[in-house]
Image (tube, rainbow over all chains, first blue to last red; front, side, top):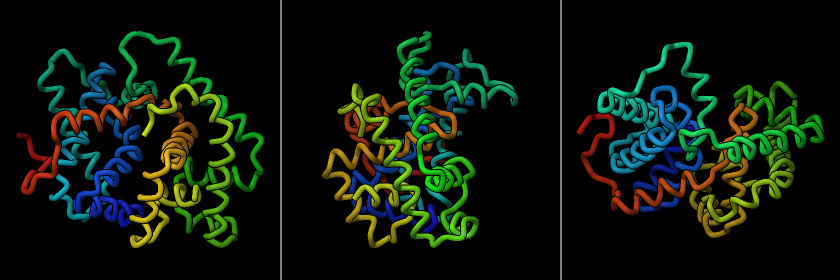
Length: 197
Length: 80
């Protein structure tokens, strides 16, 4: 199942009035869009505004999404337009050079203020360390499937071919890997419970 | 059911299965939480350990506040 087809199904549900389908798309893509916007926009608060505007415009324009391209590609184009519009409105913002955007995007934390926030930085570090520790304890075949998918960006079918296993096994391994890590993240993320989707 | 969360996130469900899976996930706070956390795990592995500290909730809140609705003929790629 391609991402294009399934996102189109979620879009179709949203177009039919299922707001939760659109929310699922927001939750799925918010970080990626925020990182993209942070390549253009300087202040973290402004990044959040631009991301919000991006999703609101996307929702308003859902009827015009025909599924000719992937939903994320469409969202990405809207976000780019919104970021550039923001830059035109606020000349104080500086469009960063080609070598800097990725670095800025790496550093972006949605919801963070412009000021240094040691608590947030520590929290993000705890999350990263917990995931890395869990990954180290994970059965190698589960970690391998997860890394091939999440980091290498390989589709399920390709992973199945590479590892010589049925695609159903790839699905199970990735799920089990995520669940293993998610359980170890639970105590770390507990303070945030209720603020997430 | 958490397997379905993982499959929904990765676009591995058939179109006919998406609605039922989504309804189940939305109705269960634990499954909604898993959907968010599984996504976070992927982002962390790609180098972004940012938690969702209400970021998406603020998007939904603003949509509600502004009464966002689907508008026929509105093109989000054109400047207003």
